[in-house]
Length: 268
Image 1 (cartoon, rainbow, N blue to C red):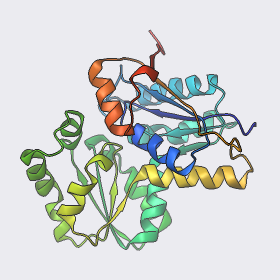
Image 2 (cartoon, rainbow, N blue to C red):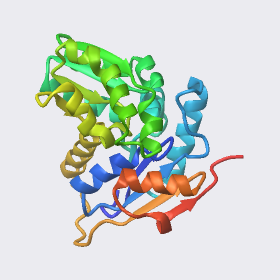
Image 3 (cartoon, rainbow, N blue to C red):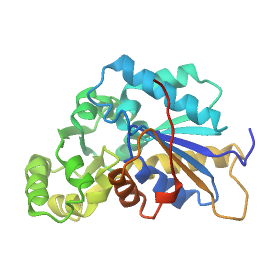
Image 4 (cartoon, rainbow, N blue to C red):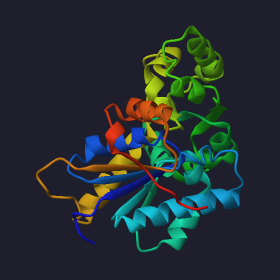
């Protein structure tokens, strides 16, 4: 495996760009190839087999770009397809956001909250992974389905979003949760709103931060960190491209990327 090979990242849409943002922060000299399956988003309403199929196609695309590791930035794919992909693609290290965040959370607290989409919360994946690392912690989960549309519409300062956040997070606050996993790649965008609702003492776990650190440690231990002096280059591929997708992508990544987005087709 060459050090100069890029890191591959995929998501069902563009929320995974918050993961790319963290990878860039932790690994500034690594090249990154990102695939957002925007033509088939969301994955959460799909059946298990089709999610595995889509995730396999995404992985094959990234392997075609000669990546040295694959990061599953999609919570649904992480919950449903991670083990399947790791078993099928044994020659490439595969990382995913749920396991990384669970490991971080048990280091930070004893009463852990998890918020996410209905599909992610319904999968039970976060509870399973948290309990895998510590059987003594208490876990409280809450689906927050309205966060994603508000974020994607750019309604970050609306009173309605604050009311919804208060409603969703009310029981988590009352339960005295000390650590909260933001179990959706969109949620770090409204980190300040979540923090305000839960209080300044709450420890927030961003799965993008968690998986970026894990990838860094793996590459460092294997002697596979890119030692180029320049900043890493990024390539962005999507399966559907609209003006709205571009605006959402730039909000998640925190930089202009309109000219860098390339539309590709995975399957008929």
